[in-house]
Length: 145
Image 1 (tube, rainbow, N blue to C red):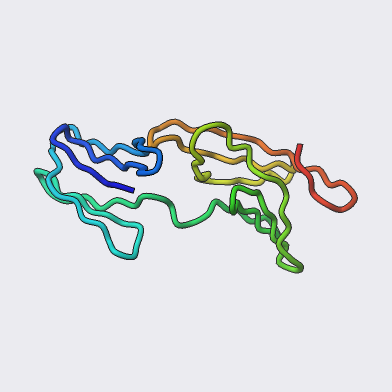
Image 2 (cartoon, rainbow, N blue to C red; image 1 turned 180 degrees about the vertical axis):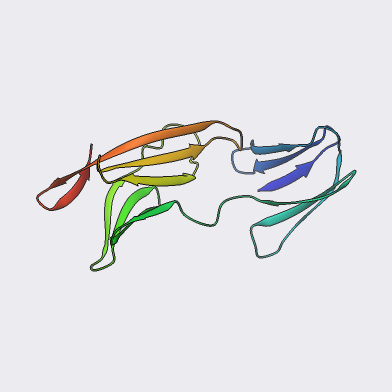
C-alpha cells in the first residue's frame, strides 16, 4: 500500500499489486503537505494548510448484533451465529458481488421476520447498500435463502 498527497487537495490510498487507487480523501479549501503513518496501528495523519487530520483506513470492529442469547456477526466474508450456551455456527457466505471486498458497516436482526439486514457503505461516500438475508430453520440448523 502507498499513501500519497497532492496539491490537488487529495490524499490517495494505492494498492501496489493492482496499481489502482483504493480510496481518495479530499478537502475543498486546503492542500495537504505532509503524511505520516503509525508504525503499528491502522492510523495515518496528514497535515494541511489549516491543521492536521488523523485517518483510520478500515474499521477495527466487525459488524455484529445480539438477540436474546445469540450473537450474529460477520467474519471472514461469512455470516456467523454464536449461541452463548453452545458454540459458533457458520450460517452462510456473504454475497460480495464483483470488485473489491468492502466489509459491512452494520448488521441488524429482525426476530419477527427471522432476517438479517446487512448494510454496506461504498467508497466512504453517502452510498448505502442494504442486503436482506432470510434465515430458515431446517432440521434444527439455520440456513439462508
